[in-house]
Image (cartoon, rainbow, N blue to C red; front, top):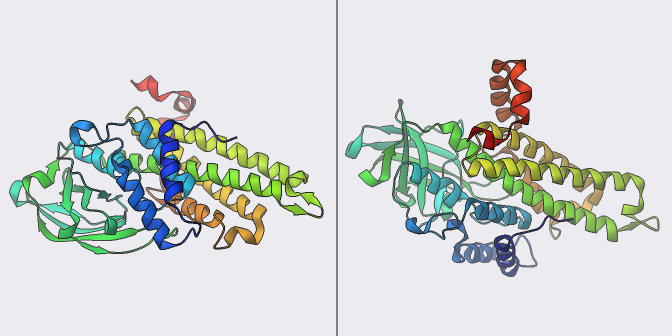
Length: 355
């Protein structure tokens, strides 16, 4: 059974459904969804009213991410409020009433700040930036070689090379060539670690994955209920029943991972919770996509059917802000260094224990 959805979730689902088209890959349909989603103010849901947003909570924004994942919608969810605005707020920089494209901080990025104050110069390239070609302002966490800075620059001053993710979503390269930054475009944040920001990005992808997994399990269940083979419904075969049970089990597990992700976004969980959640969500995404296509057969990859649109997003989101290998290596290194005695207390603690 699909988990109970909040009023926010239902409102977002209605907007995405109403603006969608029966031809799921029609670019006009994607454009209508984008305009409807942005027009409703959902990208600013968790920005405080004092900073020009909707005044909603992180939980509201999490519900929005789940619904976007459930719909497989190509819309800018989470980037402006949960990631970009969070960076601006930490740096005490203005919150513009614009869509924010946020650099995810990949290992290939070479963005750098040179100089200080009014003489600060931004150079280098950020890779795989979500929705940069359709956004208005670029926000990134950048180092000057010693400490981190948050930069906020109009995208019109930067060079954008349009690129796509596996799911066909914009993941662009953004290049700054000696851009002089004004006082309200850059601010030092000595206490901020890039790892903490990457953890927030990973948490946002866990919630998108949860929504897509939820939709896929419902889709598979419906298909196996209506599709017949050898005079019997697919769900009447024992092997199919077993696979359906495992899919529901994985849906419950990704729900638990999403709970950790929400704690991280609410600033009551550390990067370690984000790492554990992203590792679990990535493994679940792989299993759910594989099993769903096995049970659907060839129809699962047909252009007219929704499954491939959802599974392609699972594969793309699984790798964004770090995949299982990256987070597993980082988390495993830390846990091994703490010793065997610390492992069980770490596994059984609650994020609230740290408050």
